[in-house]
Every structure is written in structure tokens, then in C-alpha cells.
Amino acid sequence: MWTTRRIHTFLSTLTSQIRSFHDTASLRDALDSSIFFATSMARMGADFQPLLLPIFQPKVISIVVGYWNEGVANLGEVLKVCRDAGVAAPLYSDASTATTTTTEDGMTSTPAPPRILLTLPPLARLLNSYLSGLNELRRCLLPQTFCELRSHLSKFCEEVESIMSLNERAVLTPGMRGDAMKLREVAKKMREVFKTVFKPFCVECLEISFGCLKEETKEEEVEHEETAERGKEGIDENNEELEDDIKTNDDEGAIVTGTIEDKEANVAKTVEEEEANTAETAEEEVPSDEKVQEEDTTTFDS
Image (cartoon, helix red, strand yellow):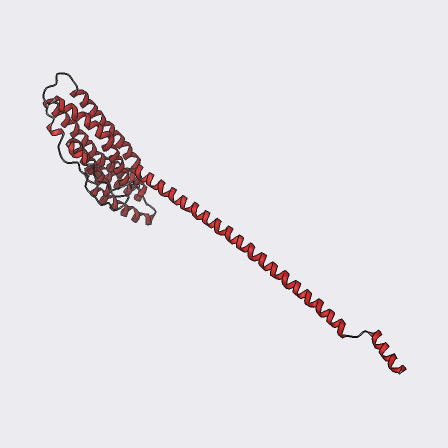
């Protein structure tokens, strides 16, 4: 009972103190210390490691999602201020979007951010907030948080789309003062870039942060299919050549077999002829009994 009370007291204190953590690095240190304490108590049959996950998992998600929510709030505020002031200059930039060569360590390395976002500073700042949350996740990644973070990412994208939709409808209001044409152009472009570039990039980064392999692009899939077809054609050609070689070998084997059989027949025929000649010679050389008796009778008569 004393051990149970001490563990309960420790967990209660941990739950209350963990609320003051604002970064996952400190949270990871607390998690390591708690796991060490739990494994030490295991020697007395009081291992409470399974009770630690419900305490640390919500805090990890809260820290990561906090960065995302902050970015969404800043986006909505910037769009509202520019819309009310009729100023579009803070919403776009003429920065170059030329691609630069980047080196990736492997399939699980974080891809380079799309440079087209440099032309839309609000989306670029939103992406920075999103990636800051993933950096916090890297310091204290718990597998049980995967499903919840995917769900929060869907909510994050829905909130951003809602803010952009409201902004686009607001700038289309007739009689808007200021740089109305540019605000409408930027609002439309921002929605298109978010759907085609920003959202897929966020999904890809989240999956890579979980350790999942990056999915192949359509060009890579086509290239792999062509490689597979070329390999299949090469295999078929090799099989045809092999069949031709086998057929040629069979024909040569048949010719050789026929030649050997002919030689064996000729040898057998020669042996038979020699045996026949030998028999005839033996008959000529050995006198018969009748001839011997006749010669003997002739001798006595004489």
C-alpha cells in the first residue's frame, strides 16, 4: 500500500508540474527521468511505465499544435489588417522563385520548402510556424501521437481554407477602397497556392517526421515502370536466345547421335563380315573325316 500511495503521489505531482513545460526538450528530460524511476520501481514489482503515456502524450500534442494555431491566428490577423487598410503590399513579393539545387540525405530527409511561397509572405510565415511545431515534435516523438496529429493537421488546413475563403469574399465586396484589384488578385492566388503547393507539402513533411518514406512522384513511377518493361523485354530476349541455343544443341545432339549409330552399325557389319570370312577359311583349311578315310584306304590298297 505504501508503494502504491507513493506512485500515486508522484503521478499527481508530475501531472500538475508538466503544465508549466513549453518546449519538448524539457518534456523529454522529464520523460526520461520518469521512465528511469519507473524501471527502478520494477525491481519491487511496481513498474508504472504504462501510466506515463497518458500524461506526456497530450502535452506533446499541445506544444506542437500550439505553433500551428499561432500561425493560423497570425495569418487571419494579417489578412484582416491589410483588407481593412486597403493595402496589398505586405501580402505579396516579387522575390525570385527560381529553383536551387538542394542535397537530400535520403528518402526520409525533409524536402526543401517551395520557393513560390516567397511571393506570398503570409503563407511563408504560416509554413514557418508549421515547421517549428514539427521541430518540437522531433525532440519528443511518441508513436501514439501519429493519428491525433494527422487529425489536427486536417483541422489546421480546414481553418486556413476558411480564413482564405472569408478573405476572398470580403475583398470582392463592391466599393472597396484602396488597392482592391491587387487584394483580389492576391487572395485568389493565395488560395490556389495553398491547395496545390502548401497543403501537399505539409502532409509530406508530417509523414516524413513520423519516419515514413516519401512517396514516389508520378515521374518516378513512370520511370520505374519503363525500367521494369525494359527489364522484362530483356528477359524475354534472353529466353528466346536460350530456347534457340537449346534447339540448336538438340539438333546437333541428334546429328551426333545419328553419326554414332551409323558408326556402330558399320562396325557391327564389319565384325560380322570378318567372322564370316574367318569361318570360311577354317572350313577350307581343316580336312573332313571322309577325305581322311579315303586317303587312308588308298594308301593300304597300294
